[in-house]
Image 1 (cartoon, rainbow, N blue to C red):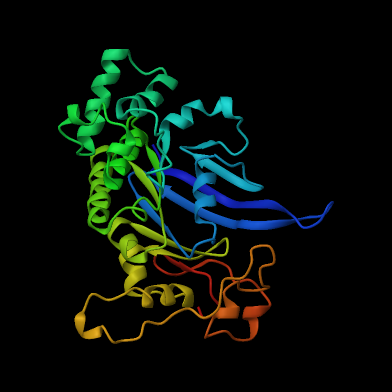
Image 2 (cartoon, rainbow, N blue to C red):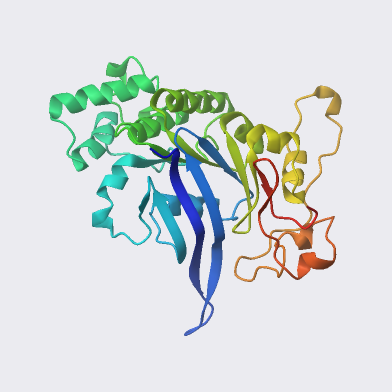
Length: 322
């Protein structure tokens, strides 16, 4: 069996944007991305808001059909499969969403929320489903279980709701989970707990994660590899600790320098901020997409787009400096 679970090959996702009564122009949300995720591995996808991270996550789950390219899951090409042909994939790939308030039905109890995917996939009888619900709630540490099964979402805290969302993703025993900013909307005290929980569940069930985040600090601790995304492109890819210790792309360096330091002696130190705003994906700049904001730009940067190349062992970067 191959160690590779998910492969994304030259995937592009262009949305049509209407600019007049009869005219539309393409918005290049994802523009030529290649990624691989191995079994039991976590790949973090890091970048500013609007860079295409969530779109790429939705493409990997085949919630969107790409404009171009291939999505291969466990050796099977799922790029052009119709929804009725993807039921097996829906059981093996799940998502944990950013907003624990809107992603679960407020009119269903915790038991009904967790039982719904089991009913849809015709898993077990009533008694077996109840056992699976108890197991899932125990896995996410919502115990004693009898206190939670009858509750509605409004009776839970944000962290508890996110645990219900994780239990729902987990209950079908998927091999692949997209965790889309799973801790960005819950209080700081619960964030580390949720990330440690995901790591624990990954080790227990050998799950592969695509962890989407704008926080490179959590990506370092939770992920095996980090892919840095800018305006629909992957600009750097490396092992998490290597990328944080020795970033190569100017954009990655700027993201890491912008992370606040917990050292009180540095409290007056001015944090560097990336100048300017990201260009529009409707009309991305020629050449390297980061060049209008890059302090190191030189002759070829505004003319030709650099390729993502391996410049060190397992360290890829898309930059003319290398």
